[in-house]
Length: 189
Length: 189
Image 1 (cartoon, rainbow over the protein chains, first blue to last red):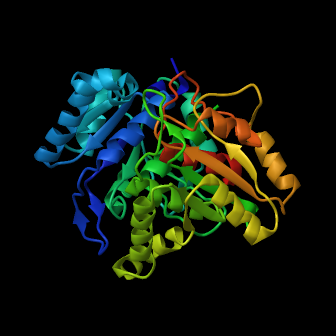
Image 2: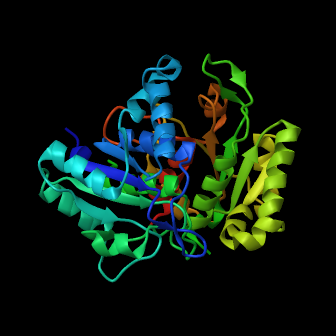
Image 3: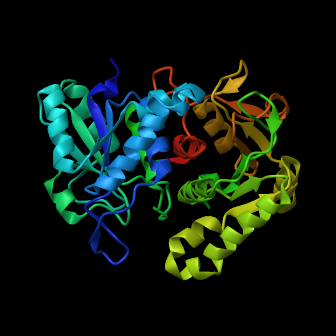
């Protein structure tokens, strides 16, 4: 059992802002599925939820998942199969939370991420200490798409994770890069 | 001037292995351009070279670059412009090395990366110490595509960087994730 065995991540395609700060549902991106699943498997994460209320989009993700799990992709690249086994689609954040509760018997603490900090942000080492202190407590880290997760998601989360700083003031990593760096900071070595 | 001001990265589309360990030139991927450029800008890297001997592919990268630098994209998303300003296409690794030599007056030390270690691998902290010890010395970190950089590239490089470990034995990050994690380990905070 890895340190990350009770750690889950969710990529939310709703509710997020668009460029004009309207709340929208974004489209699923194929490389978000693959890159983040590969990072999740590398660091021993429990589940990787793709959350979208659009049924057709969930069906598309399932189709990709099946291709790599039992279709042609499973023999072409078995390493990809190991990564995509972590994948699970959910209709809403509430459903992802319920799924973890059902599996583990405990309600997960949610950790929201984004490019700007909050007064109540926890640092990476704070969060690591929280995870280490209570191995039975499940966590769910929330990743946004589009122009980021809505205020409501921030307000409702148990923790806000500090933004990734590269030393300068440019702070526009892709969600794929940000997810990988976050997992490395929490569970790498 | 950032710590990474003399640090450069190159994404090599040749010479790399395919699945059958034949040496091939891979195709450029749009998200490799964007994700790695955004990470490079975040950590203050000097240049991001896209290396391919296929002229049509270099032209494609230039077209994408121009779209974001002076085309429609430059006003739609100026943050992307800042990232893609670091982008430069080269015909070969030798040309990228020459370009750095021309710009800085010094031949860069090359650091090759890959998913498997070598007897002579340097750790992230070793490499960080080397960079800090000699701020005037340019470095060029080599990232592979396809099934990885050829033995010849490994043999000719000054340093081999240790592979990223996530604690387990799964070691199949995307090159976009790996590049981001490497830059964070070297230059993050």
